[in-house]
Figure: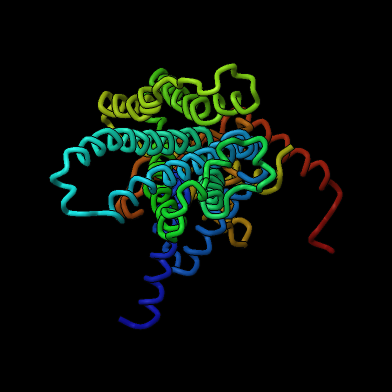
Length: 299
Length: 103
C-alpha cells in the first residue's frame, strides 16, 4: 500500500471520528454523501469539520444553552463538587482510622467489628447518594442541552474538577456553609497526609461524580426514546432527587446558619430514597421500553 | 425573501423531485454554479429552510453505494415553491434591460 493511500485512509478515519460530533442521523447522511461522492480523505475531513464548526457556532448564538449553563449546570456542578469533597473528607477520617492504624489483632476484637458495622453502612449510603445525585444532575444537563451537550457537559466537568481542586473563593465562606466543610485542624493527623488531603478527594470525585455524571449526560441526551409521558415521569423523579440534593446539603444548613431555622441541629429526613428516585425511574423506564433508538434525529 | 444559496438549494431539490437528497442536491448546485458546495453550508441551509417551512426533510433508505448509510431526503413544500417563484421573479425584474453578456 502506497504512502498516499495510507494517508488517505487515515484522513478518512479522522473524518469518521470527527463525524461522531454530529447527531447520529446527520452523521449517517453526511458520511453517506461523502462515500457516494468519493471524496478524498482530506476533503472528507474538511467537509465534516466545516459542518461541525457551523453546528457548534449555531449553538453558541442561541440563548438557551447559556441560560441552562447559568441556572442549572454551573450551580449543580459546584454543589455536587462540594458534596463530593465533604464526603471524601468525612470518609478519610474512617479510612485513616482503619488503614493507617491497622492491627491484625483487631480482627479478634468485637468492638472493632461493632464500630465497623455502625459506620460502614452510613459511608456506603453516602457514596451511593453522591453517585446517584451526580448521575441525576448529569441526566438533567443531558436532557436540557441535547444539542449543546458539548458546551454544558464540558462546563459541568470543568466546574466540578475546578471546585474539587481549587475550591471556591473564600469570600463565599460567609454565605455558603458547605464551603467551610474542610476542617483540617480537628483531624490534623489525617489531613497531614497528602493522600487524604489531595489525592483521595480527587479519586472519589472522579469515581463518584465525573463518571456517573458523564453516563447520566449521555443517557439524558437519548431520553427521547421514551414516550412523552415517560419522559415527564423521568424528569419529575430526577427533579425530586436534585431537590433533595439541594435541600439536604445546602438549604437546611444554610437556614440554620442564617438562623432562619429555629433548631440548632435540625433532624434531616433520609436522603437516600429520593436521591435514588432518578436512577430508579430510569432503570424502570429502560426495562419497560427496551427498543433502542438513536439520539436526536431530525425529521 | 430567500438568499441566493437558499434559492439554489430549493431549485436543485425541485429539479430532482423524488430523488432530492443531500449528495444529489450538492452535485446539482456544483454543476450549475461551477463552484464547490460545502456539506456544512448545504446542511445548515437545509435546516434553516426546514425551520422556515420551505422544505421538508426525512431520513430515507440506506444503499450499498453509500456504505450502508441513510440519505436525508428533501421535498420542497408549497411555501417553498412560492418563495422560490417570488425570488425568481424579483431577479428577472431587476435584470430587465441589463445585458451582462456585453459588459
